[in-house]
Length: 144
Image (cartoon, rainbow, N blue to C red; front, side, top):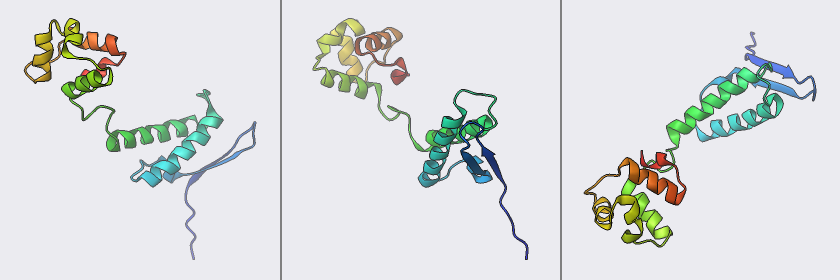
């Protein structure tokens, strides 16, 4: 009978003597939220060990697992604001801050331009995006 032993990386910290057992499966991209959760725990443990030491023997393992978790996030979790239109965002900001169209006239170059934008007849220009960014303290990325 042949026993197939899975390949793994075993490491014992020189300072804390904490053992790390990393089966090669930790280097594959997660396919489910359960796999993601397990890898996130492993990554946290590696981060505690490696810290900012790029020469640490486990630094590459930490990097690969981190990149795989980031891939999963990109594939399964939409970016914040990804499904919100510019009009919906400006309406939300107006509602949140109890503003009327005339309150944004300085940003859009007049109240009529605010109305045209909110009715979908006008797009946001660079100056309006910059003005909204400054007024509300939000990233211009929400409008790009």
